[in-house]
Image 1 (cartoon, one colour):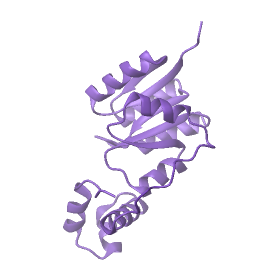
Image 2 (tube, rainbow, N blue to C red; image 1 turned 90 degrees about the vertical axis):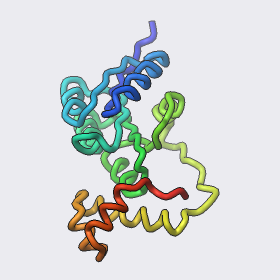
Image 3 (cartoon, one colour; image 1 turned 60 degrees about the horizontal axis):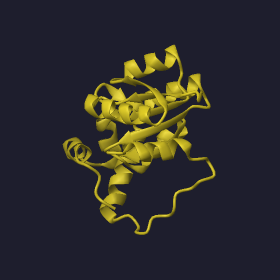
Length: 177
């Protein structure tokens, strides 16, 4: 009998989490779910899974905290970050904390399965189109925001912009490439 691999899904969107859990169970994974940073960390501390799929922005914190704790308890675990707010700074932070991939939402089960099975020697192809100036600006703001530990006031001071302007920029989705 084939042994199933355990997978932890952490997402505050319960409908998406449940749908994805069902899809991954059909593909042979034993899935457990969590809907907050605290629940995700508790599940990891109870039994660190070999695989995890974690939403970047959870209602009560950052999914990066979950990935960091998973990597501390099980360095060989493969974690994937899902996000609607993709940017280079958080992708780099996720990889530094132990994530193996960074996928935009909505990612389907096949994309996640492919990312989980992907070896380190596989590299994605280079982009066909370079980033637009608006996207480069967005990436720079996000990088500084992450360097300031997501402190809006400190980020605004370093970027020499009004705090409210920065808040409006951060509330929007990233510009298209």
